[in-house]
Length: 226
Length: 226
DNA sequence: CCTACCGATCGGTAGG
DNA sequence: CCTACCGATCGGTAGG
Image (tube, each protein chain N blue to C red):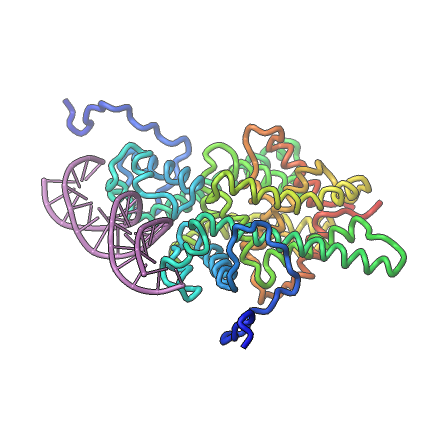
């Protein structure tokens, strides 16, 4: 028997469809247990809040004993930060994928995306990230900000800034064309508020689909192009 | 010495400018200690969150010993509910005052408020309630919803519904005139999101005044009247 | 990753 | 409203 490839009594964890590079070699990644902890933590942090969730709850949700999460994470706070960083990395990846896909599509028609089309792609993807499947990570980031230490906060902020930066030229183009009125920075903050707030009320089983919500949002924010 | 009027060694707490009727006779209201607890609790719940704030912190902030808050409130949860109910009552009062004041003003010009003017008054007042002075109560209500028991939740919801109901005919009028586009219910939820989110980022000392923010919000949401 | 455990803190209460 | 206190729970760790 080849000892370099031990017998697998448990099914091998499937490789992630899109492999994101691990940034820090310090982080453990033995099997899927760490990922499972992140998933459970994100779900509980979202539904109960960070402070009201015990590390015992998280361990139990992942089928572990009370002390075991601390084998994977230094502290409860580090687990929270990891949830947020993981969520932001996925969101960034999804955002650039969505933009690339849309750009490719119109390229076949030998044209480029209009600013309005760009905004639609960004808004639609944002809804997916916020309230679509596997969407606990970003709401946790939005609503548990104050539970982070300053150091962790700046790490998460760096990713958040990258995510929001993509929106800026789009909104500026819409302002230049008269489709978006008012101070662009304030408008951007108000728009993100409108979108982010959906995490508070949107129920996936509801009448309104995310497509319909995207339509309403664009109708609400944008004027007719002059 | 007239015993019916005991000597006041401490200054008598000033009567509130606008006396709101106490709803429940069961609630104690001996002096200003209860109000002080509410104020401190609102501040700490907002900055640290409900679960991360201990009743000892609150007691200390009000200059009491650890067990004393429970003389005024049945439980920590009841204190949270009281903060939210107090906040919503004040917000409702302020909202109807603001509307009445604006209506009076235009009446002197022998006309009535336009739907657009109504929305401006509502938005401006909402910003005051959210991020103006003494504004901890409403953010606590918005962000600690999940910490309430179902019973308390329905009590707060009743007031919240009354507050939002005022907006509905205004938004419907704007939709009828073409100044607001898209599904009115979804638009209302998105608008409240945009406004409520300001509690997350607005700094009172910032460049943007609440008047400027109101302008931007109306420019963002509304079309030209056709 | 489990067992067994520690010190600290928490919400709440009895009695005054 | 204070004093003194209780039982429960919590984040985290040593040792394997």
